[in-house]
Amino acid sequence: MTREQAFQLLREFTQSESLIKHALSVEAAMRHYAPRFDGDPEQWGLVGLIHDFDYERWPDPPDHTRAGAKLLRDRGVDEEVVGAILSHAEWNQADFPLDRPLRQTLFAVDELCGFVVAVACVRPERLAGMQPGSVRKKLKQKSFAAAVSRSDIEHGAALLGLPLDEHIANVIAALQSVAGELGLQAPASASD
Image (cartoon, rainbow, N blue to C red; front, side, top):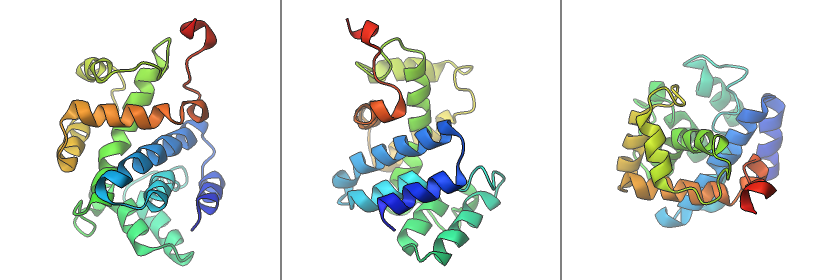
């Protein structure tokens, strides 16, 4: 599956612009991490882009991920990609454990990307100049982006063998590279 085909699939199954932007942010983070773990940026980006493509149609576990995996297999998508997508949901981890860098990284960046985007949305400068400290401060506020699992974020950094601040900095850098696509570039007035 090419990136173009993956994006078409995402658009076919996903209407929500916030879910599209989440997919783009996870894609960017996966591409950012691929070289660090000797991964293929194209494959890793593809995993990030379509990891939740089935969520709107099948939002409930275990249908979310499993229905999408069947569809991907029917379309001939590489099993490594399918397995990585299945592994990011805890209900699949007995059969698809977080046992390799591709799977570990998807798990590690998924929640954190959502959280960093939420932090960017409340900053006048958006992603510009964001530091791990701002994210850590918001992580301590349980009411801020309350649906985001703080334990998954911490577990993700541990899976990658990174201090949490370094992991946050990596994800911020990845998202800054696609800030325009995410609608999170600094407004002209914030940078003046």
